[in-house]
Image (cartoon, rainbow, N blue to C red; front, side, top):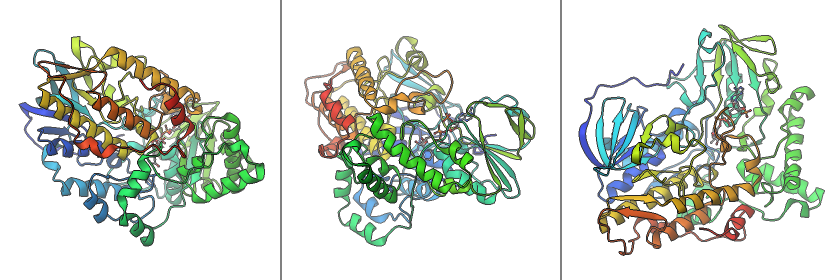
Length: 582
Ligand code: N01
């Protein structure tokens, strides 16, 4: 297993080196953070487990992996030149092209020289006497930094369920999130895929094209809307590039940080015939924007059921065998788990060599040396693909021994679920920042926009601390408690908090059940962060000789003045405004 682990190249460990910041991870978050730190004159070291940049897009090389947000929007916005010079070949570009983009950015901004690859951070300990973080890695590095910045991604700790007998399996087992760099040849193989979330739904149609037989083990069916992916239309690309900042501004005004047509009207205000037309229009556009067909789909159960029924009819229309179609039809809230975006997924089940096995009531009992057993039947396979997801949001933090003030382990502080102020920081862990941490919009918004906004805020905060002579910053308990309460309060108005998804940690037994991302919408969140900053970092306390009356200077954050587009704000965001923002 885990054949994705790169070979280690030799290098001497770094001992006693001192940096302003250590950044953990060189995905899109770590790369941009490094760029910001350098711009403001901070020294930084980035540690990255892989042998290259790209994070999620480095590890998730499974067949069919591509983004489900339009590439023209799922990209950095900090450099107009970069926006202009890069060409995306498809509407939703495939993983190799996104990884090529990450490499291009690393080269263009000369990022690699401060990144140590093939190196995992194993421990980060706050030294209270020195007000510095001591960082240790699996390559023997022992360095210290004023700031420890976690850029570890929200979906990067792969979950391989501890199936009984898994070690006895004689063929290869690949997790989609740790895919071998050299690729996998399925030809002539009997393949078993476990899991039908986004990764399974993207990879299954392509695996089926090669494999001799494909058996899919499904615990819960998911809703998927067709991507209708296409080659980039040069006219469209030109029209965006003529005024790229306008598209970025429109996107930031949306709760998702993504611009797409959105209809604020409640679903039940239309007649069934009008709804059918509306759903068909949005279905024909494809992808995640389908959720924009009506304003209340994620808030009103009856409204949601109309979309769910529409999607189920689409499945039944495609899948020939009514029993298989039934198994593929979810009966829960539409879009409650992250909506999937597919290309030929349901059609795959019409192929004679593809079989769907329901493990919802009779779970996978064990793995044998040549198969997967459920309900007393052994399904013989030569190869297993685990599309079984991730220990989301907090899993990558748990893999590192992070210790704050008074020897407090982060895992202990978060044992009942993550607690943060703004998803940026957490009490007891001074000078410890999280990019797209739990309690921020993160996975519910355009990740790259969320990353940039966080990194810009952090580097402005660090520059302010340098201006005023502060050594540490840490949120206060009251503000953290209020923020956690607010995050929960907003989550509770959305249907999304009601199902067993990875948003609430329910995909892995034993994890605390807490809705982790902030659902109040990107623009409202950004406004809140800006307000906190202009109010002199309200809710934070500074230590060691700080002139706390000095007004913060706005540097990078200047570009995050987000207009609230009230015509299209989701009810969640509107409600978030009504619930007093702390
Ligand atoms: O993981 P998942 P994913 N026995 O957790 C099943 C992003 N992403 O990697 O639903 C049997 O969604 C599990 O069943 P259940 C996107 O945000 C984006 O697919 O828990 N089955 C489920 O079917 C996405 O949401 C893209 O009952 C078991 C599956 O494994 C997130 O990443 C592409 C099991 C896991 O689905 C995660 O997606 C890919 C067990 N013991 C991913 N344990 C884009 O398009 C788990 N399962 C950009």
